[in-house]
Length: 388
Image (cartoon, rainbow, N blue to C red; front, side, top):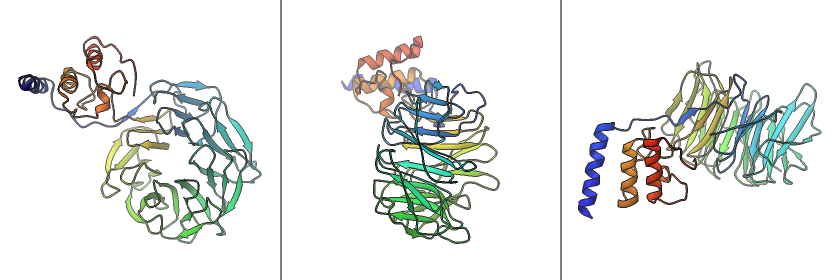
């Protein structure tokens, strides 16, 4: 056995010399969803990352994490959020006409059920659902609207602060949540609730007010500041620390997307779309994407491996840190990956890249069948039977 392991290890070394060393990669890739130069206004991603819904002059849905798309000949709300894997919710407003509505879809945006709200001249900015029945929406009025019936009925809950308007909302369960906003001319910025929005406690510590906000647990959250900066809290919103001004001069950010206490993304635009990422709670930030292109308008991250950012002129960026079959992380499938797969299956050696990339038949285990599929892909360009 030792001789076999040594022989395979030598083979790996020879192949690496022939094919080169892995190079850094961008985890964001531009995809063509077939809408030309149409503007993508909003995006929602299911908790598993499998389903993506885009909002434009028409709706688009992907059931395979952005590999293929189906287009519906109607538009839906631009402000959307999944409550669970099948329940998609949205809010829409037209302040000029006084029309405001909430929406629900159970077929990923193919059809929508709408419910008009008796609220005059509110412009919604964000909606957040924690499951299929509990949701909240905020806008440019001094109250939030909430439902605990899964969209069928909504109640307006006053913040108790005259002139306060909400720019973002984030709940971690049916009781605990935060709203980012402010009152013009004051430092009142973030409000917290522990009773589902029946009452709110101010946390006045972000200059110029707050915008979009994202909490991952009872302590850790990020908020967009009025001065285009990102602020971080580790005490449930009681205090905030600025971690960077990502909007630069004439640029803009569209708020934080946090998935846990360490990993957060900030998307925006400054002479082109940019995406920054932290993996240590905001102590350090890395520019993960900065290419020529159109401005970003919305983004969502559901975990450290799945996300989408969208914007003008049909811009759709898919976060894809995992390429099936790319076992050394160099963005190509070559003989190097075949050798690594052989080592994994027969010698139980670890991959340099995530282990899931070697499961080429998506059955949850590594067997000779994966080696055969990878050989077919490498030399015969045969597609894998599944996609991640």
